Length: 486
Image (cartoon, rainbow, N blue to C red; front, side, top):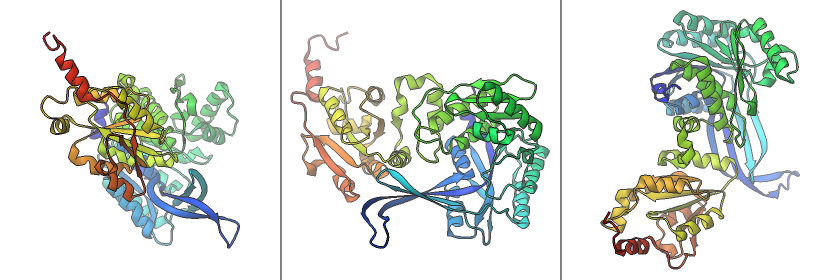
């Protein structure tokens, strides 16, 4: 299997329909006096990259260097879209603003954990000829060192035949593979592409036949090969995995592991991103498809347009997942984790401590904390912080081993290591709904209480199990005759 660290050496172009995905969360407590409709009190809003922007975001999450090309409106949302790209370190020089064209924006309104409305602001009309010329000129100037070109077609008017022909010609002159996530039923538009990635429904539409079994899937692929002139296609088949079709070769099936599915939106973005990046890094077609299949399996367990990190992908592919170290998160990952949890309408509980030498009291703290919400995050002090808190000789158990033990507990969903001075930053990134501590604390002694309460969270004190403390257990062991004498 290819070394995922090679992804950092790759530059990839993403060309396609760029969108803003907007989420509006709130609560409904009354009906409007003006009409029989609910009144939503907005609690928070979030903007993320959608469409081709989500493909680019997936590539960045995997460590690639990315350039994006597309069209945005000459409006504040277009400026926001370009700013989001630039904030991720994506080269957005080939994103052209077209006057009079709205920036494609999809607004999802979520009340009491349910999506109640989606508002689309977009136009499918073809971009102007001068916009096509401007984008192709910038591609010609910038498409010099890329390892792959990814085309993400959402049917929003960017990828005209003229645009597609220009993309294929520019890539062909430089010997770059072009992968297309297609739209519609006329795949002849993609002539010259290296590979296209329809899902089963899209493949059936393009072939004009129903896909009901393996034979009809193979027949559809043959029709698409003939009509499009594209030599390879990967048909994604949901929980059944994907099938790689190459002219003159036996189709190859890449199976998926069974996973809990929250949302399949954006899975196609992840597939094409990982396929293209793997090829750019030197993988063969089967390796690339296997990586893309594993990544899609991860992203469908998230809500909305989402990305997959290199660490998540490595854990899904390797043996490290066996000891559940995939639960370990960095502080910098907490903001994205919290957004993902809240998209599912779930509540976050945080508890923190040294947890040096776990005992029954700790287990009671974790299980009781977990019952107060949906996702429990346990933050543990690093070794230096434990020494500062507990004194010389502590911790008895290193942070590495404490992490492994906590990750093995069913009640614990995520583990994060922090130094004492970073607890405030941790809380600000995670914004837990509930912060728990043992009942031996008073509310005023709980570090971070004011931070949590300032944004509407609360502190809960969990009754402690009498007779248990790490210090007492450790001192008892040290007093045992012969302990430490080999």
